[in-house]
Figure 1 (cartoon, chains in turn red, blue):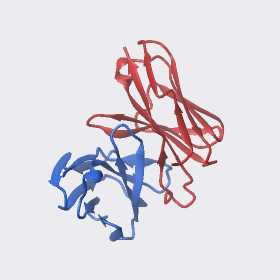
Figure 2 (cartoon, helix red, strand yellow):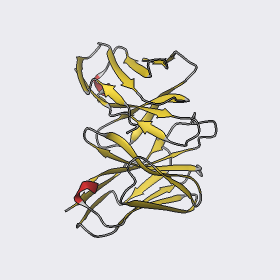
Figure 3 (cartoon, one colour):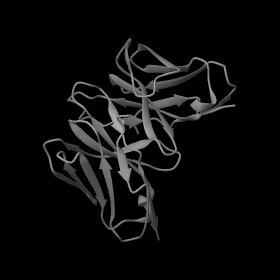
Length: 115
Length: 111
């Protein structure tokens, strides 16, 4: 398995509180992604990064922010958690050296429950 | 939404049978990839097909791509109980760094 660690693996938090999820990689890959997975929706892209301090929005970015201050870490922050953000969050990385022909490698996910 | 769709949503077959799942997408693509997810785990890459390819094989997997119809299919031959998982297609589009996933097919292979 690619060296990707997501933390925490599980978290329960209350509505209105900020939450930060961490993705750490040891592969030195340039591209990093945050997805959320919900029943009936598959995986939806929240934010992604194409380099240190270079990030962009995905399909469902409202209510989320990200930061990447070094290659190995990509942080996802829920600024004020809501019940609709209860989900499983996956981090993925890619070398993507050649127009997306490198596959994505996924972490094992963070299960977040907002009460 | 840019998200693609897969059908069927769920598929149940007997061990030894073939399983076919389909993916439709909405935009022009550079390539299409298929991933597998075992329950509670992250996705694992299976196979990639480029936009200028029509068919690709890898072991018991066969993938086809029809860019005129914006669709792809994944065939798993001689299925095994261990193939039980969810399968997702993902598209990559030139000019972006995004991989956009379909909604997935849940496959159950009965022993």
